[in-house]
Image 1: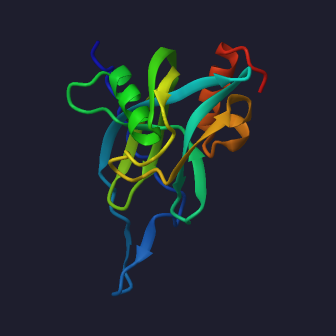
Image 2 (image 1 turned 30 degrees about the vertical axis):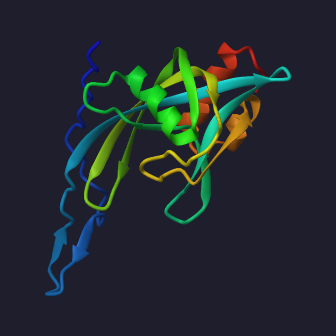
Length: 181
């Protein structure tokens, strides 16, 4: 199934008066240059195991730019020739060490962020997965983005996950699993 086209941003609105204007050394003001836009598509999800009647999700901890550890869901870029489903299974395995099978789609997150040299429009396909095996670890993360991995109770994900859009995916998973948040 082909990946749906990624929406393109419309024209940039004019900033408020004085915003985006920097004085040059010669004292003449000029507008900051527009950054190029790139589109990225990723996939990942919530791999769940049940132990003693409690559902747990495999999560990863990454350092943000300020150096603080943030808990998030495993995800990564879709490689050439992969479907979002295949990429989600691969990324969960690489970033957490857990082999898993997709149960069903959870939803799609769409957001923007600014890097050092560009604005990025990112679309992330999230899936609910059943953990089938493996030992939770970040040792096989090829990008070494994940610092630590651990099991977090699904009903605690909305408090533990750093990003609101991922917390929404956790709420969807909890509803599907009939777990009270």
